[in-house]
Length: 371
Image (cartoon, rainbow, N blue to C red):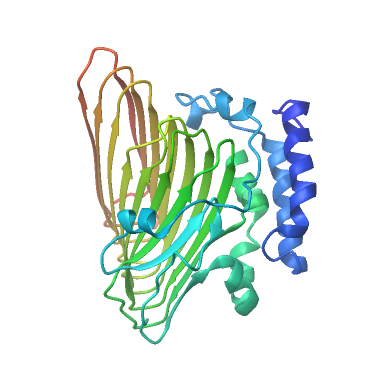
């Protein structure tokens, strides 16, 4: 069904999918092949979001829909000096250039026992059974056409698994570099933090050159009982690029999830960050900083779902805008009927340096608990 997307756009992505499907990671796995096909059907059903959708009311992605983005070529043109200039000192590093893993530019030191760190395509070879329940997700739950496109087209990404009781002191730096104009870069990151584990992960998106490209990124994080993860996302892509990213976290009892989002690049960026408290005593901190000028557009949608009792959440997003830049912040906190003794706080602060700058901010609080 092509209900919200014109025929030409659908045909463009349909033809690409037919051409690329045999080359995508895990093409030999029937369950993943079926999941990708179902995801593409979901994309055909949903189309790209429009300003008629409440969650996209202030962010118009027609410029993405109209552009015929293509799968990137194999060559990268990135050298070690460029990567070293972006490197995080002392960190384990996986490098992806135009969505493809580059082993020569990556650097993984000796990891503690119980830590798995590899690119997702390789992980499918070694850990397909473990990844199946994570990647063969509920296709009907994919909320937007971007989600569905990622599930259909993702080429590679990172897989991190930290075993029960394991702590990794050095941060993990996931460096995603885009170099090719008109490329559609679909990447996926899967992180599992076993009970009582601890890890810091930095997702870093960079564009080399003044190029127009689309990054469509999806991150899934599972934080088990008593685990702690600090997850930072730094977006520094070309000022002509487009970036759409989603981060979904699920938290177990007594776990702690800290998210830091920095949106500094792209002509248009959209970041959705959600976490759900699936057990008692969860703790989440969501912090963000965005800086924009010219005609940049930056949109953050967050959701903290207090589904169980005694959860604590803190959220602070700050923005600095100049020129004719526009920002959107929509922060939702849900307190479910069972989520007694919830402690939640949210704040969005903005500094406008020009008369042409604009911010649309919408805090939302949905309380169903009766305490």
